[in-house]
Length: 522
Image (cartoon, rainbow, N blue to C red; front, side):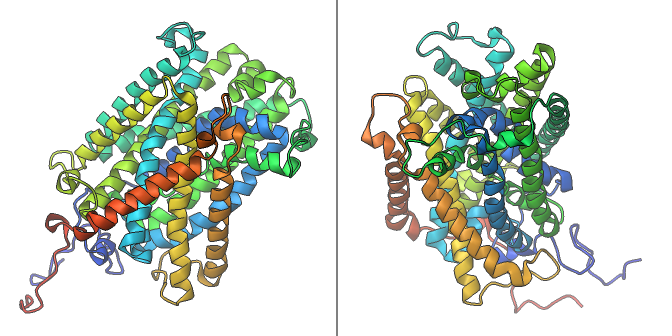
């Protein structure tokens, strides 16, 4: 029984007396979002953002084109690098499981200026990524049936691009509606989709393994690529590695839902690691057995249709189409997770009065208990970006590539300030939750070095990546540096001259600080 004079125990209070909302109060916020998500929901959010079936089916052709079968080794390489980043994020998620995690972490570690820049880079990249994932429908649906080619027959100059915009816009509209109706609906659809994706991925691995026609030595085959490169095959391999780097990110989403999760300080770090490790194992096995099972390693279709060709040619039309339908489901929940992460990031920045019309963007619907306006705004921006693809697909591909770089840079704006604070002795992991202990410093150093090296590799002005088809334009080849320079410097200039003077937690979102002069209840 409870003592008559005692305070009632708040829901979310753990045995050690700590509460799910304690980290929010430390950051200056009051709880507004409803905590309904369990372990699998947070795991599903992270793994659906990474989305192995979406990424591998969308980018397999790229890796084989530039690196041959030996490009497979970029998968474990990228995993090890991203694992270092994820481990740093786990320490942060254990202490600050908060919406817009990248923004709030960089702000807490590097100050408001670094925080705004990290949030701005991540928000811009998320909206472009939302458009890029939506384009994956065009890569898959018309291969299931020509019925999905609504515009033209696919042979016209702009048929594929225009149809991609149509299909992508429908997908963005769907994720906007789902996210607007609340996190519970989103979590249910996302979790169901992830369950289907995981089951389909395991079945695909088994089926491909049953059709293996060659040994592991095939993974050393370079197809003679890199002969004209100054760095030889290593240069070709670094280009091919982009196919893996473009997939293995977004695991921080598990923490970005921290304000809607139960016991997030314990569950968010686990969800981050589980999502990354599961994606590495499942994706690595799919790529491995696809290369060992495809009838002809020299087939031109490998560099055009990628995994879709492997599945259809190896498993037959019927099973292949079932697998492709599962890929469509994976693309859908990936889009849903990307949109969800973007909404939480916009809400977090608006709550600090760091976006235009902040009070409206930070408003939480009393009915759906979720920020509705950010869902609509981000969806509209994503559709607008999609439209660029109709007549300028080459420019769109450049922007998409740059968006990935911006996410890696946003991650770097967390790990670098974290390393600075660690070296100064100002970083202490929360007791009782995830901690790297004595490995914290070396892991953090590796995370920073990896983030800087991969960002440079992603941005390197390769004509084959940024100006793949003629005519050649210098501004496309140097697009990464130009675009990021404009977005980064322009955005920061806006913050410095306009937003900086207004920044601060909006009154309606600030934590309730008890008056020390008020006497406590006996």
